[in-house]
Length: 404
Image 1: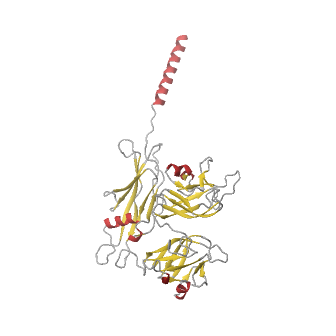
Image 2: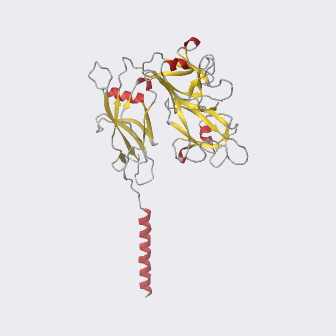
Image 3: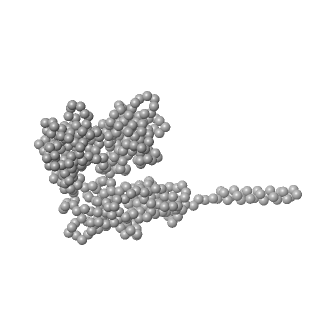
């Protein structure tokens, strides 16, 4: 009986040892899992002009590729003219989930595809370029189990007729704005506001407009056709008499020069003068440069228009190459509560994309003294100035954060 018990224990021990051996030798195999595709929306057609070469053409985005295991993934944005990618060229390689290409990049692809807008050639002005994303885990040699591809996405590129030149055509290269209603300019020629010709017969730019109310004419301004030349002014009656439809935020100032008066809410706007449609309009500011992101987002108690939530985040647009700027209402009520803290984000609604005070400090930014490290759990920014509206600029080239 004792011998039988001994044999049973021996077999049980052997089984336990074998089980441990098996557990320790388990390996996880990476293999493609599920769909992998672009997550951004695409335009029906991409209109390409040399004047807009530095503007954003398209920002390709995608969700994480799933290989069934936690591992680093490298992505390639690839392009092809044939659509089957036998002529594949790598546009960019990244470990993030997006790649931006400019209008200039798309113009290059259009030229390589044989497109032109010359009416004297047989080359088409419209064509298709295909893009896809390759995801690979980069462990050992690439195999079918360590790589995934999205479906090819066709982009239709169009080169509009340019009227014989590459640049948009206007009567003047630009218009100039001067006056108290344009606080970046004021009544002088040191820093006039420039409205470049951005389309045939169209002048436009993002501008600060001011309306402080009261008796002083702090909301008036005038357009000029020549920098520094007061005699080249175009006042409100000039456009009204030419039957322009003028945005209701502008009225005749009825001062000595019948200037424009801005009667809207002080802020940052996209101002467009269309000499073809004969309109002067104001709209939301538009991206006018090339940045890593089209905009940054601001959330926090220190920015009361946003607060700590994603219902009404404050948008800071790309307004120049590597520059984000705009008017922001900052709050500093004092006291023990953290009512003056906030943070920047690169993706709307994504708390994981936050850029706090140490992020910029580590990157070597010179940060305006009205901002300090909140020294809270997330090391947010804290606004220490007087509550009010300021023009905030983040220059990623000069590495500065300033308010005016």
